[in-house]
Image 1 (tube, rainbow, N blue to C red):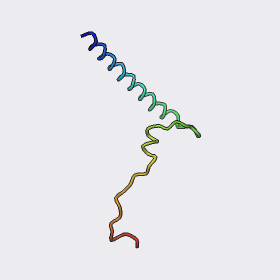
Image 2 (cartoon, rainbow, N blue to C red):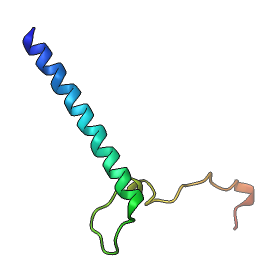
Image 3 (tube, one colour):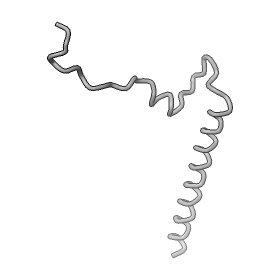
Image 4 (spheres, rainbow, N blue to C red):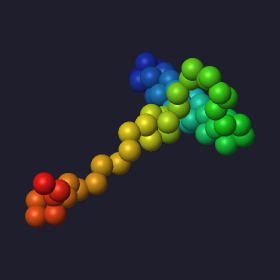
Amino acid sequence: MKNVLNLYLLGVVLTVLSLFVRLMESLGGLLDGPAPGDSWTTRGQLASAEPPKGLPDHPSRAVQ
């Protein structure tokens, strides 16, 4: 029973630590933008690296 409690507490601590790290990352991104030549890439930059793709043109409208 003690092992289960220890695992539960470890999970709670890791969850709180993960939330804290995400909060610090978001606050850091709001306070100062990425410096020029910065080698670190944030999740937001990775998500926006590729432009969104729209639906393809209708075949009757395609330029021939």
